[in-house]
Image (cartoon, rainbow, N blue to C red):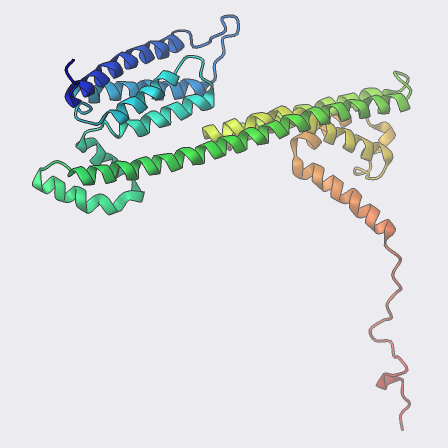
Length: 342
């Protein structure tokens, strides 16, 4: 049996990689052919679609490199590594897994990229300006990058991309943990808010007093105001994908927060702790409670101002009365003005 030469082994690995690329492209095409996955619920995470689009672009880039023959003279390790990445890419990938696959494919592509593309990558990375002189010298001579120089360049770029990927993983984990806490707090807040509402209605004799209707009206207006405030924030402030991803659990909790703020403001107004202009609390209609409830949910500074004002009233009641100060011009026994003239 004849031994297999390194050239034959490299060619075999390249042919296997071509087949794996074809199979991966079919799986990605299947994902895009049915982007909604659930026929009766036509919805798909836009971020996941973007990640698969990036994977698709890098598959095309890899095929171009192979057709140019860039991988034939490389050792088999990069071929096996990139094959492993391709085998993990299926249409069942989640959002984070799809991003990881796209970034790992980007790192693996460095070993297949021609020298010209590596030089372009170096030019675009501000962190690797130290290689500019070497790249300029290479362009002057018109020669290819030396083997050692190419290895160093790939290593530096791969390290940089890996650090970025780790940083993004950390950010995604942080956002997911924050979202989990928001959903947990929202559930607890919803239970407590429902219990408080039931107890308030029960104390007011169910359906025997308009206060119950006013309370529910104020809470609904507070939830509406809080959601509207979130919509304005979404329209004017949140722009990036990461901000949108982190804002989703906040928007889910907004109605409960607004309803809670409106309920507290309703209690403050009806108890007489704070008076609004010359209005009598007994004369408040549902329009009054709707407006105040909406403001409590919509404007955080307004609600916090009410809370600080109530807290200030409580502090004033606890503070002991201060003794009146004597007039500044009043004479004391020790002062020169109190002594008789000689």
